[in-house]
Image 1: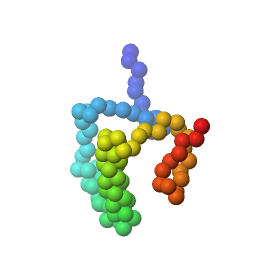
Image 2: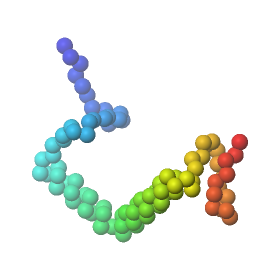
Image 3: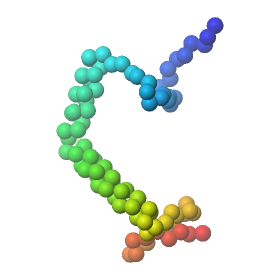
Image 4: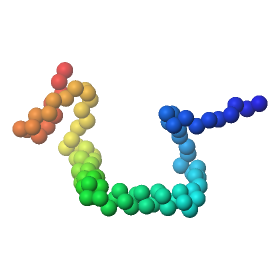
Length: 91
């Protein structure tokens, strides 16, 4: 006899990208209306704008790494030097 699988909200679960989940109309409407209500708030617009700005700076950093301008910091301990705009690795 196979063990019955039970859902535990305290655990994390995984699935494949091609796996499908189904929603009924009520569930779909609840999610859609919730997202719309959250996204129309000014705070959400600020977060979305910050995310767009983050995407821009990540692309700039990516190009900088690919062009050899920026190098990976190997040691995890760093100290930010605000006057010079760079991080110094501490031993």
